[in-house]
Length: 122
Image 1 (cartoon, rainbow, N blue to C red):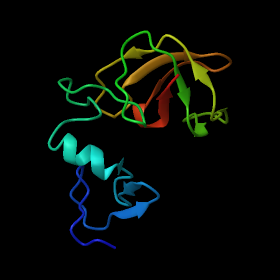
Image 2: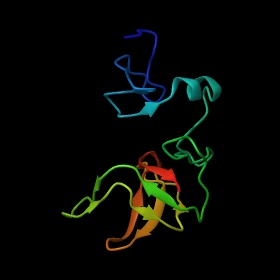
Image 3: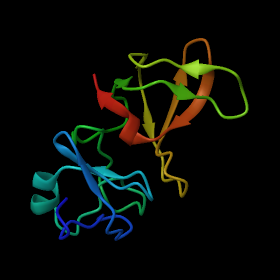
Image 4: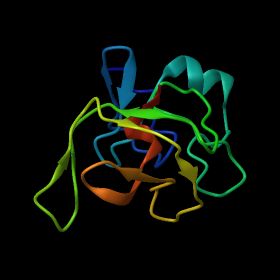
């Protein structure tokens, strides 16, 4: 393990490499070392309203895009699950403090908010 690598989100020294990405076990943030060098100090998730919202692969998202969910997501307060591979059309980007920066409507489930780190641009 490389002791020089720290999580860019929370500063944890316990980050580990998983394939081509680095993962922080404390805040669950995943990042690419190449993206970190290019965007050093830049906000990736758009949580402060000034940054650009990006998907799991680093592609910029805009209102009206279609995205695909990359993993199964439990719907809080329900027994339903949004399956990985579900295509979501016509997303809206919102400035949410809890990290859920995509507002959308999913067929069979209804209106909900998603985190951009769990979707990829379709």
